[in-house]
Structures are given as structure tokens and as C-alpha cells.
Image (cartoon, rainbow, N blue to C red; front, side):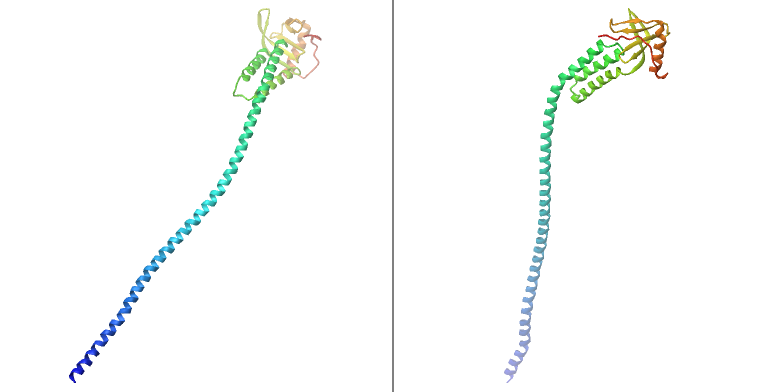
Length: 250
């Protein structure tokens, strides 16, 4: 009887301990599963972050690729345009070279003709006119001046010479006659006549185009020459002048 009580008591005492062990076992498994789940979630979160970063990088790379494509297309059009412009410039340069080659002989001839005109013309402002021609000759030989600029300067010189034929002018200069040089006032009336008046008013003269020399004029013309000088200097209103002229000449 005592043995049975001890056995029953033993079973009673042992039963709670066995039950606790059975409870702790699932709890440990649950903790293990929770820990494993947490690790898995961490891996998932890490993979998600990496995937998100990769997606952002992909999108950024896609945008850069699109931008580069647009830039390259624009650059290609620009290069094509510049290539066409270069071809046009080369063609223009070739045409300019051809034009300059053809115009150069003409410019040389025009300058030579202008020089001959000055040499046979009435001898007014000779130093100024000859200096202009000398500058033209130097200009034609310069490689750094365009053909257009050279031609413009030559035409400018021709215009100046043409204007001499329809203007009246008074200027002071040196008169060389028979080895004597003296300062006088010159009166140029177009290309019709060139006259001079001594500064003291004691003698006057004119250029003889036929014989190509200076000759004196009678005192009756001195007043007309003096009036012409005053008109040319805008010191008197225009009026009729009576002066000796040549109706024929070279």
C-alpha cells in the first residue's frame, strides 16, 4: 500500500516537470523560427534596398543614354552643317583666287593708265597725285590686302581725278620756271586752266598746255585771277571770270 502511494506521488510530482518540458520545446522552436524569420526579413530588406538602388541607377543610366543620344544627334547635324559650310568656304576661296587672278592685270593696267594721265595732265597738285599713285602700286603688291579693297582704292583715285575736272580750287605751292622756284597762289578751274598769282600781286601767269610750259599773262588778267582765287576760297560769291584759255590741245 505504501509502495503504491509512493508511485502515485512520484507520478504526480513528475507530471508537471514533463509538461513544462513539453511546453518549452515548442517555445524554443518558435524563438528559432522568429530568429530565422528576422534574418530572412533582413535579407529581404537588404535585397529590396539593393534592387531599389539598382533600379534608380538603371533609370539614371537610361536618362543619360537618352540625353547622350539627343546630344549625339544634334552634334551629328552640327558636324554635317559645318562640313557643308567648309565646302562652301573652300568654293568661295577658290572663286576669290580666280577673281583676283583675273582682276590683278586689270588693276595694274588701271594704275598705269592713271599714272600716264597725271604725267600728261595739267601740272596741278603733282606731289599729292603722284604720291597717291605710288601708294596704289605698293597696295597692289601687298598680300594682306584683299582684291576688293585694292580695286576700291583704285576706283577712289579715279573718282578724285574725275572730280578735278568739275571743280575750282585755290592752293599755295612752289612754282619752278626757268630754274627759278618761288611760292605763288595757284588757281585751278577744272582742267580748263591753271593760273598763278605772285604773293605780292606783281605778276601772274598760266600753264600753256600746247607748249607745256608756264607763261606770263598781261596785267589785265591779274584782277580776274585774284577774283578767281577769292571765289575758290569761298571768300566771294561766284561770278563770271574773263581768263585766257586754250580751245585746242593735246
